[in-house]
Length: 229
Length: 300
Image: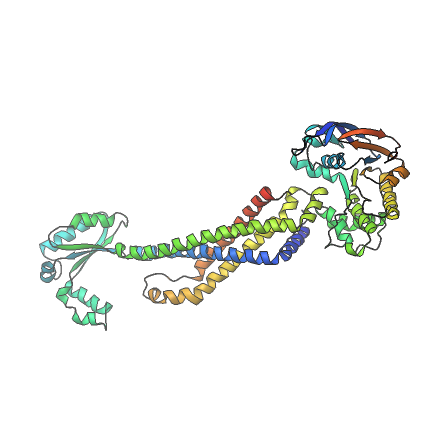
């Protein structure tokens, strides 16, 4: 589903590569934690997958699309296959919960019928039944993140990228969000989650890829965050 | 493409930047109002030329002695001159106006004025009034044929007199176009600025649109339509301004010379002719400026 071949990313402002000859593969339906200290290259990794940036060297494949060489006009097609969730939720504060989720479908031209059918379904899936008409500020942090997940998942992407999705949440709420991501993973969606949250990584015992100074220093099939961290 | 979605986004954007939108509409309106005024001046010049083209004559005035002695152009000097003129293929017809007829015409023109009292028939020359078949080269041909001939006092080309009027309207047109260009630059910068602000205030929406895979076209279209809507509204206000200007100022200003047939009136039909041009310019310039701004300054 995701394959990186000796991917290097150099920024003009830095002498050290943000990613240095990284190779790895993620199979369809896998759940992978991407861990590592700040500046280890996690964000660059996610940005390259989304084609927010292009690698200096190497190839990146996401569901058979060569992301590094993708022409600009085909980037939207790639992004329609990838859902994204962020630490800061990035909800549209002037739209209701339902409108926030619907927005993701409307902007890719889905019909009104599809939108009105799919949005309630995905809100049920994330546990927000009956809250479609609420405004984001009326919701708790956990609920807001659920809206963000619903928006990321509503178009049934093949891959879900989550960048510190529990970073702003208390431990209990974080646990709920992880249960939700697991549920989404069970539908066959590949989940790649960058995190600093030890307890979550340790409790889930899923594949852990650790980055340090732009290189993969560990890749455990059922890993933990790491002793002494 | 979901039309309802794009429409909703456009109105949200216009509402959110309402003060900038109003500034953009007004600047565009003033700019296009000036362009429209210039276009009306061009049209007036064209129509004035048409108005005069079949009235233009070249007048060959005769010397005092010929004027006094030959009352119906039957003597050799006058008949020779007339024959010479009539032979020219560039001349349509030649009409003789005697001193007496000139005097009567003068009395009509200046009836009730002191000038009419002091004028005497012998102070006005008899004239050969030449109608041209060729408006372009005819006047020069007439001048060459008769200038300096015995019995000719001078040759007057009426177009030279009217040219001054055209020069005046032309200068007015140039000034309005110059002002329009300055205003247009201000309007372009405002449109560009507004599009940038609009994109900035909606950066979260735009960010989400990009992430979920909206095409560049889908992302840009609301901003472009916003710019075009304000450009077109500006043009419509400009057209309204021209209509108001016609009834409030232009009609009064030109009433005297229009009544005398010197220039044609500015009709509503003229503004109707200008309106679609202004709307196309307003919408077109806004669209192009918006597109270039989005390409250059805004990452979508």
